[in-house]
Amino acid sequence: MDITQLKTEQPNAFSTYLDRLGTQAAAALMNREDALVAARVGNALPAIAAAVDVIAAALAAGGRLLYVGAGNSGRLGYLDALECQPTFGMAPGIVIGIVAGGFGGEVESAEDFPEYGQADLEGQGLGPKDVVVGLTASGRTPYVTGALQYARGVGCATVSVACNTGSEVSALADIAIEVDCGPEILAGSTRLKAGTAQKMICNMLSTLSMVALGKTYGNLMVDVQVRNHKLRLRAQSIVMQATGKAAEVADRALAEAGLRPRIAILMLLAGLDATQAEALAANHAGSIHRALQGAGQS
Image (tube, helix red, strand yellow):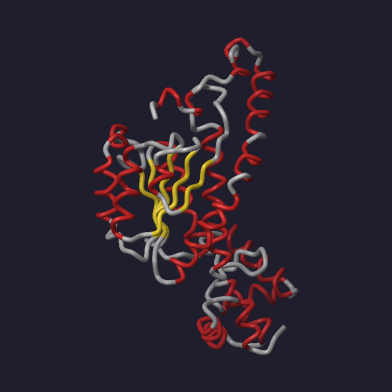
């Protein structure tokens, strides 16, 4: 489809006089348009859930999650991948964000070449165990179409995320996620509503995949990496909430567990030392619930 015909490129009738609105009126308009996004993303929940299941299964089987995109879309995927390490304790290189032309957008024209998308995935040693998520607001970015075509040829599971319906990338993906947020208040500026929608979708894809992998206990980040004082306090609070223990008890267990909340929680709930708790976690794929059941705890 001609890019000028895409919904994301059309002028928004409500913002025709944007440059003549007062600041408060402009902010109210922008806020009103942004409020539409969550409901529109909600319409795509079946596809999002299907993608989460595929991603979680791939990660559990030793595969990787690779986001590919250009411009703002690519940078959103990169950010989501980056956050999986400190939040969920994922090893580097398991969740990867690839941006056409580099993260800083040094080569903006890179998005025009499908072969660049293929080359970047080749450089990652893409294999059939991996999942590739192509992010493109327009749904037609050549860099992303090239990446998805190559991924399918390799035998990867593929997911597309677009903010126009009936998009080109949807036809190239096993699971197509399409969210129509309507025209932007600044015509064609897809870092706005379309960007917000993509960020929400990436949040769900990664977070819910990690939940499925047992990287949480209830709604607690039990694999958070403790890298500073704030995160040490957060980890202590997580252990306290999970076990009901006092701060000094939680902190002592956390120290004995090598600052790993997951292990500290198992130590306190199952009455184990750090070595025993680590072995118990390993025998139950890291899941605290399953590990506690295996140890005869409720």
